[in-house]
Amino acid sequence: MTLHTPSPAVAAALNNGTPVVALESTIITHGMPYPQNLEVARQVEADVRAGGAEPATIAVIDGTLHCGLTDTQLETLAQAKGVAKLSRADMAACMATGGTGATTVAATMIAARIAGIGVFATGGIGGVHKGAEGTFDISADLMELAQTPVTAVAAGAKAILDIPKTLEVLETQGVPVIAYGQDDMPAFWSRSAGLPAPLRMDRAADIAAAQAMRTAMGLPGGQLVVNPIPAEAEIDRATLAPIIAQATADADTYGITGKGVTPYLLQRIFELTDGRSLTANIALVRNNARLAAEIAAEMGKLVRHA
Ligand code: PSU
Ligand code: MN
Image (cartoon, rainbow, N blue to C red; front, side):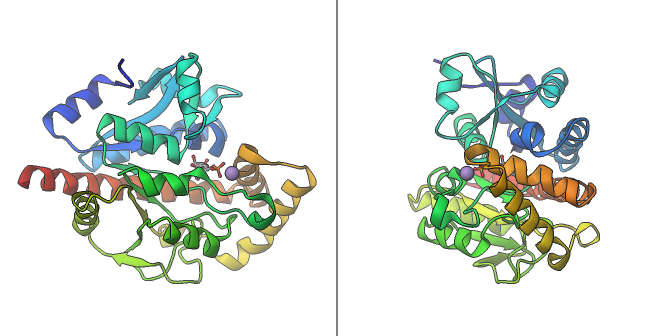
């Protein structure tokens, strides 16, 4: 049984040792409005190519797990309404029944592992939601990082999450959280969450070497690289705090739960910031794509020298 279908470009890259970077699709279907989502998806793929790597945007279409989408597939996905948001729990069911769905961080990591791709770029990962002591809302992304050997590049945990609790769960699960080029933990739209990151690395080569060492030691799981948003695009924490409080309260009022929480909060913050959150989101995803391409290149060198 073939589990996944690489696009011709991704298949060629994997065959001839060109670095490949996986990209998620939930950010397209649930994270950004149309048409910006399509523009960003194309732009991020171009950023990966400019960094010398081949992009592999992941999605399940009519039951097929695609690694690398054609422009038509990207466009269809970007405009589609009611697409499923797939994580570890429901990805296989969607594939088995011929369904269509976008992949979250967790599902994208699973696909990357199946395809033989070692690194992937996203905006922000899921994490422990504020109030999780009551709702138990903890993203499956965290447990995925603990068990699937893929290095994920994100701009930190979103400020809509409880960042200290997210870091606690990652530590418990044995996931290295590596801030790129600074000591502080980045917080998605802001460069700092106001607390230190567990680890810091300044070179893509070190990040690649750390993943290789983990695997050599027989430790399952990947790494979370947290890459601060470019300074010119950041929204500072003080500006965002009341907006996040408002969005969280609204989610409560409307009884939003489960998979709906993250998309609702992102959309509400987009409205409350008059679109500024989207501009920041675009800048940080592109920045992560560039770093992921560098890490993919360094991973390739390690394989060739092994
Ligand atoms: N980051 C973004 N936009 C998004 C997401 C993350 O900037 O849409 C998505 C990712 O796919 C992530 C998911 O895996 O939200 C987390 O959802 P949940 O909290 O339901 O696990
Ligand atoms: Mn959740």
